[in-house]
Amino acid sequence: AQSVTQPDIHITVSEGASLELRCNYSYGATPYLFWYVQSPGQGLQLLLKYFSGDTLVQGIKGFEAEFKRSQSSFNLRKPSVHWSDAAEYFCAARSGGYQKVTFGTGTKLQVIP
Amino acid sequence: GAGVSQSPRYKVAKRGQDVALRCDPISGHVSLFWYQQALGQGPEFLTYFQNEAQLDKSGLPSDRFFAERPEGSVSTLKIQRTQQEDSAVYLCASSLVGTKESPLHFGNGTRLTVT
Image (tube, rainbow over all chains, first blue to last red; front, side, top):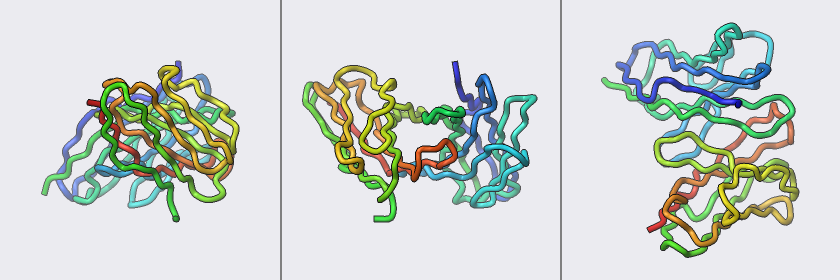
């Protein structure tokens, strides 16, 4: 079955430190991949997306993600975290020719001063 | 408005009551999705519309759940005879065209609590 896995439920980082959130997918073919962020009481906002081509994609708010086919991974990174980045992050995938987007269970990011 | 609008923001229903949740997508957006997000979980797909046609309802958990989009714009998700397990945030999303590259734009959701 198609699935998206985020192995880390909760991550705490210090402000200014680097961040990496993990995402693995299980699909027959490489899906379209997305990262969304959700602040408390808010909907989901798209950070970045990968369809094909360059495996390092840039997004909003200084985030980037790297697609690694050999590891079926699409990890999200940020060089220096700001307190305002505290939120929940969701990795998502959509397979070619099908509209449904499948989400991971999310990683909650806490930023400490 | 500029974004996807959902109403009400919060809904408390007694077990057994019927509820209706409304979604106003971004004007001109062809595709509309409903997702259910339980506490501490990621969003789970419920159903998908392209214009007024409901093309996928495979995620609806039971026949108590019904969604419609009669004029291809506003959509309503109806839950009949609510149960406690229906308590969740219901998210609506729309996208401009019906292609897989089109990003989803989410509303802020309706938090349903069934008591």
